[in-house]
Amino acid sequence: MNRRRLLGLAAALAAPAAARLARAQAPALPPEVAQALPGARLQGQGSLRYFGFLVYDARLWTSAQPVGEDWAALPFALELRYARSLQGEKIAERSLSEMRRQGPIAPADAARWLADLRRLIPDVKEGDRITGLNLPGRGARFYVDGRVAGEVDDPAFARRFFGIWLAPQTSEPGLRQSLLGGAAP
Image 1 (cartoon, rainbow, N blue to C red):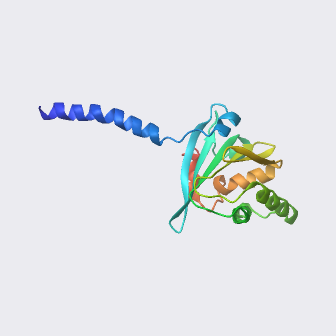
Image 2 (cartoon, one colour; image 1 turned 90 degrees about the vertical axis):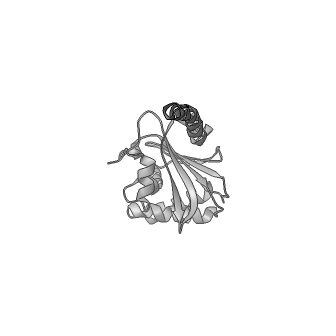
């Protein structure tokens, strides 16, 4: 068999295998996202590492319009799949700390938001998923492993919470860019 035929055969065999591999690695649309955002698609994904250790993988699911700098005005879902066990109390406290990166928070709002976060975020272990759904003009809904955990009816909370990942003031600009998938300038 000549070299040209051999290369052609190798390419023909590799193409279906590569397509199968790509399909196998494509993340599945979580049922709660499919229900809340008909026609949802994956806009971007990335991972958070702390001192080299994987903390979680993050995925940004959007509907018709891609999320960019106007992210707070659009419906989307942010899915976090945890790679390790963490206490919900610590996640809530860190979330509030990250929300403060975007600017001062009135003490009454901070107390209320921390109470909401403590109520909504459980202790997690490897493989657990927390999904936040942005409800523009209303607030946010949270799911834990696909089940509704509750809502926060406060647009300012939602803007600050999702800003942890999507606002320019995020502590993880590389993750932000991966989630936005190039939609942000």
